[in-house]
Image (cartoon, rainbow, N blue to C red; front, side, top):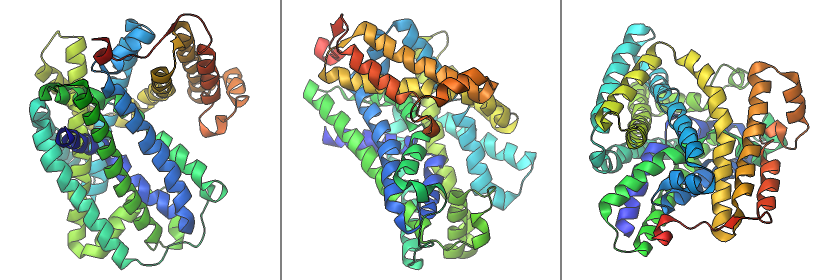
Length: 442
């Protein structure tokens, strides 16, 4: 069971650790100067802690978050929310974005810009991703045991080489917002990775792998879940720390600090690769970034296709995977910027709701909560998220006035304290239920 848990954890780590996860830690460590530790700790808490807890909670129940929400709120609500999650972090945003990111950071410096190089790259990229995703039973062997170790080794080589080459910190003190609150800023940046939503998506793949194992007891199932979660946390945390140290020690020209058009994480990765490995550094970076993005792409295609095949079996899993791959290919080439503008409000709306469900599910494991109270809690999160979206994207002043009167609004956490208050109220309202899983019920 330990072996199975570690193998599933390696697969999930490969799917979690996408392009944004690769780019951000160097920027975090760099911007934090000599005091990067509070910032990276804040980032680890929200960027790893919340997603891994969500992953563990979701896979404890063989029915996943679908079963949890069916029982606590309603089947219709769970279907609608999960459909929005899978669409927004799948073909409508995250999947085409991984392809576009791997091209712009890894391939564009070699091929140059233009529609033709992007089209050729994305066709090959999604053709290979589709080929891997249409056989989900082989994901563990191909992704978890081959591609994930490949990109992890490349990242480790870059980190170790860089830490031996760059021995002094780039700045004596934090800059910008990190100087005011390093820990708080790191926490918000980790929260904004939205990896908790990825946990909802990847739970379905973890559960499918566990069904193939055929555990002999409830204890084996739980132990494998914990091992998978700890493996994801340990691997992601190690790479985050190493990349943040690289960013903290990499020498940057002063003029780069004030240029808002430069992504500092991408700059550190590209320039350190060139400086450390010479002309071959460009190709090293291309392979490393592309592999890192690619594993996430395959995992998301498989997760989205599995969900819609299970919920809407109007066509086969393979046809869903083909459809998701084609839509992602088109958006990566034609309309990614515009589709992100449409998808981002949906993503920002559902993210606080998703985290609320994770918090509620955890609390319900230890204390009986009112079903009405849990529905009220989710409604509070949805209402505040809706007001925030109306303010940010529709420019509605009264909605903005409401949000600005809530604590933590400046950190995009205006929903948090009202949700916690509703959760506390759920302890005392009538009609309480315990958070049993399907394993316990059967």
